[in-house]
Amino acid sequence: MPIAPLFRPIDVAPAYQKVADAIEREIVNGRIKPGDPIGTEHDLVRQFGVNRSTIREGIRVLEEGGLIRRDSSRRLHACLPRYSKLASRLSRALVLHEVTFRELYEASMTLEVASIEGAVERATEANVAELDDNLVRSEAVVGDPAALAECDAEFHVLVAKASQNRVLQLAREPAAQLFYPTTEMTVTGVAEGGPRLVAAHRHLIDAIRRRDREAGVLWTRRHLQDWRRGFEKIASLDRSVEHMYMEHAQATRRR
Amino acid sequence: MPIAPLFRPIDVAPAYQKVADAIEREIVNGRIKPGDPIGTEHDLVRQFGVNRSTIREGIRVLEEGGLIRRDSSRRLHACLPRYSKLASRLSRALVLHEVTFRELYEASMTLEVASIEGAVERATEANVAELDDNLVRSEAVVGDPAALAECDAEFHVLVAKASQNRVLQLAREPAAQLFYPTTEMTVTGVAEGGPRLVAAHRHLIDAIRRRDREAGVLWTRRHLQDWRRGFEKIASLDRSVEHMYMEHAQATRRR
DNA sequence: CCTCTAACTTTGTCGGACAAAGGGACAGAA
DNA sequence: TTCTGTCCCTTTGTCCGACAAAGTTAGAGG
Image 1 (cartoon, rainbow over the protein chains, first blue to last red):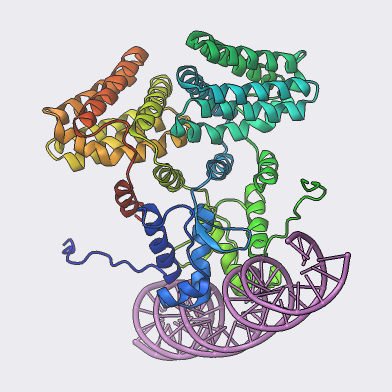
Image 2 (image 1 turned 180 degrees about the horizontal axis):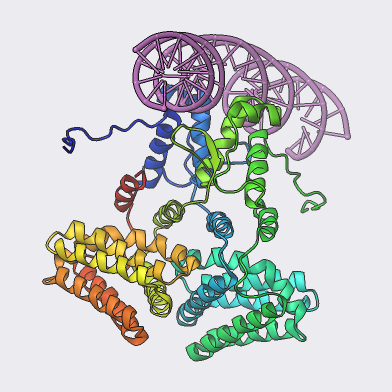
């Protein structure tokens, strides 16, 4: 005989979790705005009526979630979660799930094409100026694969920004972060890799400026295919993103 | 006179952070595999030589990051971060950044089309069976907008799963989570909204089964455009995703 | 071999404690 | 005046010890 569903499971969350949830609720529903101070730990002890250790555990949860931060003086205040921090959590998850470079490549093809389409349609003068600046810096380091890879990563972040679509910006970031460490290798492995990369960027900026969607999509595809060709000289696309890459990502995250 | 940038700020991480980093490193580089036990708090106290409170703060960080969990008996073990949990963090961030439904719609159009393309190409028998099952359940609740919205959300998760691309799966999830609460309203607002939704799903499954990419893309577009039409009867696409929605997301997250 | 109970362990929470670092006020030196 | 050093107060990071509740293990008894 099935049991009679008389009672619902009651909510028995530990105190630190309730503290975190309560503060989260206030931030998410807007009663605490980004930038607002949260109060000292002692304040929270008084308000919630729990021990400071408990409060601190709750704070750690929110801090890791990116909802609150400590400023230079270590005081707590609410803040907008940074995309790059969230994205690195996702990147980490993708590594642990052992996604393949093929998955990364396919998803990025979609996302970067969508970014450029948005950028072509809605980029502002300021966006283009940022891209130009990036291009100049890229040209200066065209012989230095490591520096060039960094410029490339930034370039695509700027394109996504120019799309004015923050959902897209956020969606493309995790895959992009995993790409970045390999770009250096692919540029190194291909003759004329550096100049090709910079040339593609030049064409992309040009397409954005002329609002030429076709050209933008075309050069984004070529640019990614270049990466792929370079990568396949080193390894199979079906290899999973390895743990090694995370060490790089981890080192750069803390900045 | 501007100060001379002679020194960089040195990084002096607190102990709980070092504890979290150390454990994270072991998990991410694979020395601790998902499922492996981490040891008791007391073990960690001995290993790291710090107080239990410090260990506990570090544990909270990792727990929130989804890298470790406590099983039924509350013992710690490493685990693979769950996509849905990570995605709800992202959804939360998108709400706080006050993204508009237009951004959501545009990004989803890209991501869902990419999903269906992947599904058409690579869906397995098992994937199709899951979709069929979902369709049956959807037909049963076609008159109940709330239940139907839930089925719709699940349907698109299954399509993304069928694409066999986990990067895509993860990338689409945050936007999809924000869509979900509105689907109920859009179905309610449009005459024949429910049947149209189910019909679209039927065509999508059919397209996947026949590996008909054109049809898949077409019906995905129509399906999303239906949502849009329904939404625009209620509000402007340029309205930002509101805080209210988060309460719904928050309530469902804990399951 | 199974069940039930009695230790034992582990977690969640508490109270108090202290050193280090930040902030503010204030006096004295350049 | 502007800078510097000092004193004091607050806040954070860490530690210690403690205890109840819940889970685990082992042994007694059927």
